Image (cartoon, rainbow, N blue to C red):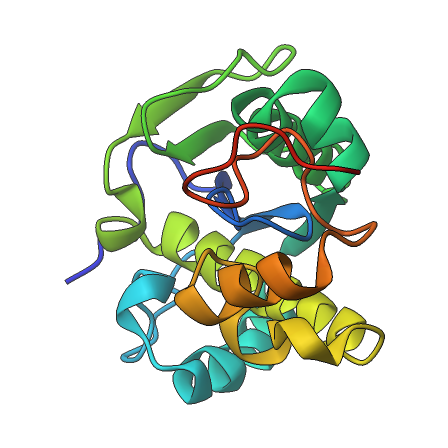
Length: 198
């Protein structure tokens, strides 16, 4: 059972999706849910089917006091590393909220202080608090939609299905076709990789 709040009303939950992918952006969601919000389906996005996540997205976007989603793309990931890019995505998503949160709940254990608003990192927070779970659903569904879009440009990697994660199929396609502009060049794309012509 997810808790509605950690300390205060008007808390923003934030979470990211796509951190472990070989291609595509890392995407963060931030959301402030209204007092009294409840939803029987809402849970950590990884525990939900794609259908349930897609059903939840419009409900969350409609009922939220404010929400935002931000992508940080491959070039920035390669420049500043995936941890910094993940935190940057969460900060940018928080920047875009139309209402300033009273407190920030962050999924995981790594974050950099956000200007003038206190935060709390919570390990597996997306399975504990509604706002983090909601942020995880927004991040995941928006990122999945983006990956489905760029799949049309490079269908041989099947990003529509694997979303850029290092599946056997995705790695076989990299071996066969090489890297695209959407691949993260700083990541180890193939297990035996020493150097890759890019």
